[in-house]
Length: 420
Image (cartoon, rainbow, N blue to C red; front, side):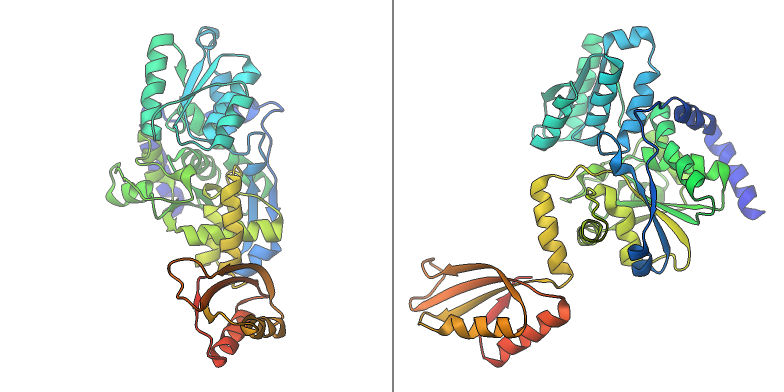
Protein backbone atom coordinates (compact mmCIF):
# COMPACT_ATOMS: atom_id res chain seq x y z
CA UNK A 1 0.00 0.00 0.00
CA UNK A 2 2.86 2.40 0.80
CA UNK A 3 4.41 1.81 -2.62
CA UNK A 4 1.08 2.38 -4.41
CA UNK A 5 0.54 5.60 -2.41
CA UNK A 6 4.05 6.81 -3.23
CA UNK A 7 3.44 6.12 -6.92
CA UNK A 8 0.23 8.17 -6.82
CA UNK A 9 2.18 11.11 -5.38
CA UNK A 10 4.97 10.73 -7.95
CA UNK A 11 2.44 10.41 -10.80
CA UNK A 12 0.87 13.70 -9.74
CA UNK A 13 4.29 15.38 -9.63
CA UNK A 14 5.43 14.34 -13.08
CA UNK A 15 1.99 15.05 -14.58
CA UNK A 16 2.65 18.70 -13.77
CA UNK A 17 5.90 18.79 -15.73
CA UNK A 18 5.48 20.78 -18.94
CA UNK A 19 4.97 18.53 -21.99
CA UNK A 20 5.64 15.44 -19.90
CA UNK A 21 5.54 12.17 -21.90
CA UNK A 22 2.72 9.93 -20.73
CA UNK A 23 2.22 6.20 -20.56
CA UNK A 24 -0.38 6.54 -23.33
CA UNK A 25 2.26 8.20 -25.53
CA UNK A 26 4.55 5.22 -24.93
CA UNK A 27 1.77 2.84 -25.99
CA UNK A 28 1.19 4.98 -29.09
CA UNK A 29 4.88 4.91 -29.97
CA UNK A 30 4.81 1.13 -29.67
CA UNK A 31 1.83 0.85 -32.03
CA UNK A 32 3.46 3.03 -34.71
CA UNK A 33 6.89 1.44 -34.88
CA UNK A 34 6.09 -0.77 -37.89
CA UNK A 35 8.49 -3.49 -39.02
CA UNK A 36 11.58 -1.29 -38.94
CA UNK A 37 11.92 -1.17 -35.14
CA UNK A 38 12.45 -4.59 -33.56
CA UNK A 39 11.03 -5.95 -30.41
CA UNK A 40 14.46 -6.98 -29.13
CA UNK A 41 14.91 -10.33 -27.37
CA UNK A 42 15.15 -10.77 -23.62
CA UNK A 43 17.72 -13.51 -23.06
CA UNK A 44 18.25 -15.45 -19.84
CA UNK A 45 21.95 -15.93 -19.04
CA UNK A 46 22.95 -18.84 -16.78
CA UNK A 47 26.55 -17.55 -16.88
CA UNK A 48 25.78 -14.09 -15.51
CA UNK A 49 23.18 -15.52 -13.16
CA UNK A 50 25.92 -17.64 -11.55
CA UNK A 51 28.35 -14.71 -11.45
CA UNK A 52 25.88 -12.36 -9.73
CA UNK A 53 23.79 -14.80 -7.63
CA UNK A 54 20.72 -13.42 -9.41
CA UNK A 55 18.48 -14.53 -12.27
CA UNK A 56 19.92 -12.32 -15.02
CA UNK A 57 18.13 -11.48 -18.26
CA UNK A 58 19.75 -9.40 -21.02
CA UNK A 59 17.67 -6.98 -23.09
CA UNK A 60 19.46 -7.03 -26.45
CA UNK A 61 18.94 -3.47 -27.73
CA UNK A 62 22.25 -3.70 -29.57
CA UNK A 63 20.49 -5.88 -32.15
CA UNK A 64 18.43 -2.95 -33.50
CA UNK A 65 19.04 -1.92 -37.12
CA UNK A 66 21.48 0.88 -36.26
CA UNK A 67 23.00 -1.03 -33.35
CA UNK A 68 21.30 0.94 -30.58
CA UNK A 69 18.01 1.75 -28.83
CA UNK A 70 18.38 5.31 -30.17
CA UNK A 71 16.58 4.37 -33.38
CA UNK A 72 13.35 4.02 -31.37
CA UNK A 73 13.14 7.69 -30.40
CA UNK A 74 14.46 9.04 -33.70
CA UNK A 75 12.00 6.95 -35.73
CA UNK A 76 8.93 7.93 -33.69
CA UNK A 77 9.85 11.61 -33.56
CA UNK A 78 10.49 11.88 -37.28
CA UNK A 79 7.41 9.84 -38.18
CA UNK A 80 5.32 12.23 -36.03
CA UNK A 81 6.45 15.36 -37.91
CA UNK A 82 3.90 17.23 -40.01
CA UNK A 83 4.15 17.33 -43.81
CA UNK A 84 5.36 20.93 -43.58
CA UNK A 85 8.05 20.00 -41.06
CA UNK A 86 9.21 17.06 -43.17
CA UNK A 87 9.51 19.37 -46.18
CA UNK A 88 12.20 21.37 -44.34
CA UNK A 89 14.07 18.27 -43.21
CA UNK A 90 15.74 17.53 -39.89
CA UNK A 91 19.05 18.27 -38.21
CA UNK A 92 20.74 16.69 -35.20
CA UNK A 93 24.01 16.81 -33.30
CA UNK A 94 25.62 13.56 -32.24
CA UNK A 95 28.90 11.69 -32.18
CA UNK A 96 27.43 8.24 -32.66
CA UNK A 97 24.25 6.28 -31.99
CA UNK A 98 21.75 9.14 -32.17
CA UNK A 99 23.32 10.26 -35.46
CA UNK A 100 22.80 6.86 -37.04
CA UNK A 101 19.26 6.57 -35.67
CA UNK A 102 18.22 9.96 -37.07
CA UNK A 103 19.91 9.27 -40.42
CA UNK A 104 18.21 5.88 -40.82
CA UNK A 105 14.78 7.15 -39.74
CA UNK A 106 15.08 10.07 -42.16
CA UNK A 107 15.92 7.73 -45.02
CA UNK A 108 12.77 5.72 -44.31
CA UNK A 109 10.66 8.89 -44.49
CA UNK A 110 12.67 10.13 -47.50
CA UNK A 111 13.39 13.53 -45.94
CA UNK A 112 16.56 15.62 -45.94
CA UNK A 113 18.81 14.99 -42.95
CA UNK A 114 21.87 16.86 -41.70
CA UNK A 115 23.97 15.50 -38.85
CA UNK A 116 26.60 17.66 -37.14
CA UNK A 117 29.35 15.55 -35.61
CA UNK A 118 32.48 16.60 -33.70
CA UNK A 119 35.70 16.63 -35.72
CA UNK A 120 37.10 13.90 -33.49
CA UNK A 121 34.14 11.56 -33.99
CA UNK A 122 34.97 7.96 -34.85
CA UNK A 123 35.58 7.63 -38.63
CA UNK A 124 33.56 4.41 -38.56
CA UNK A 125 30.54 6.19 -37.04
CA UNK A 126 30.86 9.07 -39.50
CA UNK A 127 30.94 6.58 -42.38
CA UNK A 128 27.93 4.66 -41.00
CA UNK A 129 25.92 7.88 -40.64
CA UNK A 130 26.73 8.91 -44.21
CA UNK A 131 25.87 5.38 -45.29
CA UNK A 132 22.29 5.94 -44.13
CA UNK A 133 22.06 8.94 -46.45
CA UNK A 134 22.72 11.86 -44.10
CA UNK A 135 24.67 14.99 -44.96
CA UNK A 136 27.41 14.94 -42.30
CA UNK A 137 29.09 18.18 -41.17
CA UNK A 138 32.14 17.93 -38.93
CA UNK A 139 32.09 20.93 -36.59
CA UNK A 140 33.57 21.51 -33.14
CA UNK A 141 35.51 19.25 -30.83
CA UNK A 142 32.64 18.21 -28.55
CA UNK A 143 28.89 17.71 -28.53
CA UNK A 144 28.11 21.22 -27.26
CA UNK A 145 29.95 22.86 -30.16
CA UNK A 146 28.29 20.52 -32.66
CA UNK A 147 24.88 21.28 -31.16
CA UNK A 148 25.45 25.02 -31.56
CA UNK A 149 26.08 24.45 -35.26
CA UNK A 150 22.95 22.28 -35.52
CA UNK A 151 20.86 25.10 -34.00
CA UNK A 152 22.37 27.56 -36.47
CA UNK A 153 21.41 25.29 -39.38
CA UNK A 154 17.88 24.87 -38.01
CA UNK A 155 17.41 28.63 -37.77
CA UNK A 156 18.63 29.21 -41.34
CA UNK A 157 16.77 26.33 -43.04
CA UNK A 158 13.70 25.75 -40.89
CA UNK A 159 14.79 22.16 -40.27
CA UNK A 160 13.50 20.47 -37.12
CA UNK A 161 16.12 19.65 -34.50
CA UNK A 162 15.86 16.05 -33.37
CA UNK A 163 16.98 16.11 -29.75
CA UNK A 164 19.07 13.24 -28.44
CA UNK A 165 17.06 12.79 -25.24
CA UNK A 166 15.24 15.86 -23.90
CA UNK A 167 12.04 15.58 -25.93
CA UNK A 168 8.72 14.01 -24.85
CA UNK A 169 8.29 11.92 -28.00
CA UNK A 170 11.89 10.70 -27.90
CA UNK A 171 11.44 9.71 -24.25
CA UNK A 172 8.12 7.99 -24.98
CA UNK A 173 9.58 5.85 -27.75
CA UNK A 174 12.54 4.82 -25.61
CA UNK A 175 9.99 3.83 -22.96
CA UNK A 176 8.76 1.02 -25.20
CA UNK A 177 11.80 -0.89 -23.88
CA UNK A 178 9.98 -1.02 -20.54
CA UNK A 179 6.78 -2.34 -22.12
CA UNK A 180 8.70 -5.12 -23.85
CA UNK A 181 10.47 -6.16 -20.65
CA UNK A 182 7.18 -6.47 -18.75
CA UNK A 183 5.60 -8.38 -21.62
CA UNK A 184 8.39 -10.96 -21.63
CA UNK A 185 9.12 -11.03 -17.88
CA UNK A 186 6.06 -9.84 -15.89
CA UNK A 187 7.59 -10.84 -12.56
CA UNK A 188 10.87 -8.91 -13.02
CA UNK A 189 12.21 -7.46 -9.76
CA UNK A 190 14.81 -4.95 -10.93
CA UNK A 191 15.96 -3.30 -14.18
CA UNK A 192 19.46 -1.86 -14.67
CA UNK A 193 20.03 0.51 -17.58
CA UNK A 194 22.53 3.15 -18.69
CA UNK A 195 22.00 6.86 -18.10
CA UNK A 196 23.61 9.60 -20.14
CA UNK A 197 21.15 12.38 -20.88
CA UNK A 198 18.39 10.26 -19.38
CA UNK A 199 15.99 9.54 -22.27
CA UNK A 200 16.05 5.74 -22.00
CA UNK A 201 15.90 5.81 -18.20
CA UNK A 202 13.04 8.32 -18.09
CA UNK A 203 10.90 6.54 -20.68
CA UNK A 204 11.50 3.08 -19.24
CA UNK A 205 10.72 4.30 -15.72
CA UNK A 206 7.37 5.79 -16.83
CA UNK A 207 6.37 2.55 -18.55
CA UNK A 208 7.46 0.30 -15.68
CA UNK A 209 6.06 2.36 -12.80
CA UNK A 210 2.68 2.79 -14.52
CA UNK A 211 2.26 -0.97 -14.80
CA UNK A 212 4.04 -2.13 -11.64
CA UNK A 213 5.44 0.41 -9.14
CA UNK A 214 7.07 -2.45 -7.18
CA UNK A 215 9.69 -3.01 -9.90
CA UNK A 216 12.91 -1.18 -9.11
CA UNK A 217 14.54 0.81 -11.93
CA UNK A 218 18.23 1.56 -11.41
CA UNK A 219 20.21 3.91 -13.63
CA UNK A 220 23.94 3.30 -14.11
CA UNK A 221 26.48 6.00 -15.01
CA UNK A 222 30.21 6.15 -15.55
CA UNK A 223 32.18 7.45 -12.56
CA UNK A 224 33.91 9.73 -15.05
CA UNK A 225 30.66 11.50 -16.06
CA UNK A 226 28.27 11.27 -13.07
CA UNK A 227 26.05 14.21 -14.13
CA UNK A 228 22.68 12.56 -13.42
CA UNK A 229 24.05 10.95 -10.24
CA UNK A 230 25.15 14.33 -8.90
CA UNK A 231 21.99 16.07 -10.12
CA UNK A 232 19.73 13.62 -8.29
CA UNK A 233 21.95 13.75 -5.21
CA UNK A 234 21.84 17.57 -5.10
CA UNK A 235 18.23 17.80 -6.33
CA UNK A 236 19.22 20.24 -9.07
CA UNK A 237 20.63 19.81 -12.58
CA UNK A 238 24.39 19.80 -12.17
CA UNK A 239 27.02 20.24 -14.87
CA UNK A 240 30.02 17.91 -14.70
CA UNK A 241 33.11 18.55 -16.81
CA UNK A 242 33.94 14.86 -16.67
CA UNK A 243 37.07 12.85 -17.35
CA UNK A 244 38.22 10.55 -20.11
CA UNK A 245 36.25 7.29 -20.26
CA UNK A 246 35.62 4.48 -22.71
CA UNK A 247 31.86 4.98 -22.16
CA UNK A 248 31.59 7.96 -24.50
CA UNK A 249 27.96 7.16 -25.31
CA UNK A 250 26.87 8.29 -21.81
CA UNK A 251 29.45 11.04 -21.36
CA UNK A 252 26.91 13.84 -20.92
CA UNK A 253 27.91 17.00 -19.04
CA UNK A 254 24.40 17.87 -17.85
CA UNK A 255 21.15 15.88 -18.02
CA UNK A 256 18.10 17.20 -19.84
CA UNK A 257 15.55 19.36 -18.02
CA UNK A 258 12.68 17.01 -18.72
CA UNK A 259 14.61 13.81 -18.21
CA UNK A 260 16.04 15.04 -14.90
CA UNK A 261 12.60 15.77 -13.47
CA UNK A 262 11.33 12.33 -14.46
CA UNK A 263 14.42 10.46 -13.31
CA UNK A 264 14.62 12.14 -9.90
CA UNK A 265 10.96 11.26 -9.24
CA UNK A 266 10.78 7.77 -10.72
CA UNK A 267 14.20 6.12 -10.71
CA UNK A 268 14.85 4.17 -7.52
CA UNK A 269 18.60 4.76 -7.57
CA UNK A 270 21.45 6.04 -9.74
CA UNK A 271 24.75 4.17 -9.29
CA UNK A 272 28.26 4.35 -10.75
CA UNK A 273 30.80 2.03 -12.40
CA UNK A 274 34.37 2.58 -13.54
CA UNK A 275 36.13 1.71 -16.81
CA UNK A 276 37.69 -1.48 -15.41
CA UNK A 277 34.27 -2.82 -14.45
CA UNK A 278 32.88 -1.91 -17.87
CA UNK A 279 35.83 -3.59 -19.62
CA UNK A 280 35.28 -6.82 -17.71
CA UNK A 281 31.57 -6.88 -18.58
CA UNK A 282 32.29 -6.28 -22.28
CA UNK A 283 34.92 -9.01 -22.31
CA UNK A 284 32.63 -11.54 -20.64
CA UNK A 285 29.78 -10.68 -23.00
CA UNK A 286 32.04 -11.42 -25.96
CA UNK A 287 33.55 -14.58 -24.54
CA UNK A 288 30.52 -16.15 -22.86
CA UNK A 289 27.58 -14.83 -24.92
CA UNK A 290 29.28 -13.92 -28.23
CA UNK A 291 27.72 -10.44 -27.87
CA UNK A 292 29.61 -7.34 -28.98
CA UNK A 293 28.29 -4.52 -26.78
CA UNK A 294 29.69 -1.00 -26.58
CA UNK A 295 30.97 0.40 -23.26
CA UNK A 296 27.96 2.64 -22.60
CA UNK A 297 25.65 -0.25 -23.42
CA UNK A 298 27.29 -2.61 -20.94
CA UNK A 299 27.25 -0.47 -17.77
CA UNK A 300 24.14 -2.07 -16.30
CA UNK A 301 25.62 -5.54 -16.48
CA UNK A 302 28.97 -4.17 -15.27
CA UNK A 303 27.30 -2.98 -12.07
CA UNK A 304 25.58 -6.32 -11.55
CA UNK A 305 28.83 -8.26 -11.99
CA UNK A 306 30.96 -6.00 -9.81
CA UNK A 307 28.52 -5.28 -6.97
CA UNK A 308 26.17 -8.33 -6.99
CA UNK A 309 23.37 -6.15 -5.56
CA UNK A 310 20.36 -8.41 -6.05
CA UNK A 311 20.88 -11.99 -4.80
CA UNK A 312 18.01 -14.28 -5.64
CA UNK A 313 16.10 -11.67 -7.67
CA UNK A 314 15.03 -11.59 -11.30
CA UNK A 315 16.97 -8.72 -12.87
CA UNK A 316 17.23 -7.28 -16.36
CA UNK A 317 20.33 -5.53 -17.71
CA UNK A 318 19.55 -3.42 -20.78
CA UNK A 319 22.39 -3.81 -23.30
CA UNK A 320 21.71 -0.47 -24.95
CA UNK A 321 24.08 -0.47 -27.95
CA UNK A 322 26.71 -2.36 -29.88
CA UNK A 323 28.61 0.23 -31.90
CA UNK A 324 32.21 -0.36 -30.82
CA UNK A 325 35.28 1.10 -32.48
CA UNK A 326 37.37 -1.83 -33.73
CA UNK A 327 40.59 -0.42 -32.28
CA UNK A 328 38.95 -0.17 -28.86
CA UNK A 329 37.62 -3.71 -29.19
CA UNK A 330 41.16 -5.09 -29.50
CA UNK A 331 42.16 -3.26 -26.31
CA UNK A 332 39.08 -4.59 -24.51
CA UNK A 333 40.08 -8.16 -25.32
CA UNK A 334 43.63 -7.66 -24.00
CA UNK A 335 42.51 -5.78 -20.90
CA UNK A 336 39.77 -8.32 -20.25
CA UNK A 337 42.23 -11.20 -20.45
CA UNK A 338 44.60 -9.35 -18.12
CA UNK A 339 41.82 -8.60 -15.62
CA UNK A 340 40.86 -12.28 -15.59
CA UNK A 341 44.49 -13.25 -14.97
CA UNK A 342 44.77 -14.93 -18.38
CA UNK A 343 47.18 -12.49 -20.01
CA UNK A 344 50.48 -11.95 -18.25
CA UNK A 345 52.92 -9.33 -19.57
CA UNK A 346 56.43 -9.45 -18.07
CA UNK A 347 59.44 -7.25 -18.80
CA UNK A 348 62.87 -8.67 -17.88
CA UNK A 349 66.40 -7.25 -17.88
CA UNK A 350 68.79 -10.09 -18.79
CA UNK A 351 72.52 -10.52 -19.47
CA UNK A 352 73.04 -10.54 -23.23
CA UNK A 353 74.59 -14.01 -23.53
CA UNK A 354 73.64 -17.22 -25.36
CA UNK A 355 71.23 -19.57 -23.59
CA UNK A 356 69.90 -17.16 -20.97
CA UNK A 357 66.49 -16.88 -22.60
CA UNK A 358 66.14 -20.67 -22.91
CA UNK A 359 66.00 -21.01 -19.11
CA UNK A 360 63.01 -18.68 -18.99
CA UNK A 361 61.26 -20.36 -21.93
CA UNK A 362 61.71 -23.73 -20.19
CA UNK A 363 59.93 -22.41 -17.09
CA UNK A 364 57.13 -21.04 -19.24
CA UNK A 365 56.74 -24.41 -20.97
CA UNK A 366 56.68 -26.26 -17.61
CA UNK A 367 53.93 -23.88 -16.44
CA UNK A 368 51.92 -24.78 -19.57
CA UNK A 369 51.70 -21.10 -20.55
CA UNK A 370 51.66 -19.93 -24.15
CA UNK A 371 53.96 -17.19 -25.50
CA UNK A 372 51.80 -14.76 -27.48
CA UNK A 373 54.40 -12.08 -28.22
CA UNK A 374 58.11 -11.43 -27.63
CA UNK A 375 59.74 -7.98 -27.80
CA UNK A 376 63.57 -8.20 -27.69
CA UNK A 377 65.35 -4.86 -27.13
CA UNK A 378 69.12 -4.39 -26.85
CA UNK A 379 69.48 -1.02 -28.63
CA UNK A 380 67.34 1.55 -26.83
CA UNK A 381 68.99 4.12 -24.59
CA UNK A 382 67.35 2.63 -21.49
CA UNK A 383 69.18 -0.69 -21.94
CA UNK A 384 72.68 -0.97 -20.52
CA UNK A 385 75.50 -2.29 -22.69
CA UNK A 386 75.83 -6.05 -22.33
CA UNK A 387 72.17 -6.39 -21.35
CA UNK A 388 68.89 -7.01 -23.14
CA UNK A 389 65.30 -6.25 -22.21
CA UNK A 390 62.76 -8.90 -23.13
CA UNK A 391 59.03 -8.27 -22.82
CA UNK A 392 56.83 -11.37 -22.94
CA UNK A 393 53.07 -11.56 -23.41
CA UNK A 394 51.88 -14.89 -22.04
CA UNK A 395 48.51 -16.59 -22.27
CA UNK A 396 47.65 -18.54 -19.12
CA UNK A 397 44.63 -20.44 -17.83
CA UNK A 398 43.99 -18.00 -15.00
CA UNK A 399 45.39 -16.19 -11.98
CA UNK A 400 46.49 -19.34 -10.17
CA UNK A 401 48.66 -20.47 -13.09
CA UNK A 402 50.06 -16.94 -13.53
CA UNK A 403 51.01 -16.72 -9.86
CA UNK A 404 52.79 -20.09 -9.98
CA UNK A 405 54.85 -18.97 -12.98
CA UNK A 406 55.75 -15.69 -11.28
CA UNK A 407 56.94 -17.59 -8.21
CA UNK A 408 59.13 -19.89 -10.34
CA UNK A 409 60.78 -16.90 -12.01
CA UNK A 410 61.49 -15.37 -8.61
CA UNK A 411 63.09 -18.64 -7.46
CA UNK A 412 65.45 -18.37 -10.45
CA UNK A 413 66.45 -14.87 -9.27
CA UNK A 414 65.29 -13.39 -12.55
CA UNK A 415 64.66 -9.65 -12.32
CA UNK A 416 61.36 -8.77 -13.94
CA UNK A 417 58.55 -6.23 -13.87
CA UNK A 418 54.85 -7.10 -14.18
CA UNK A 419 53.15 -4.91 -16.78
CA UNK A 420 49.66 -6.34 -16.15
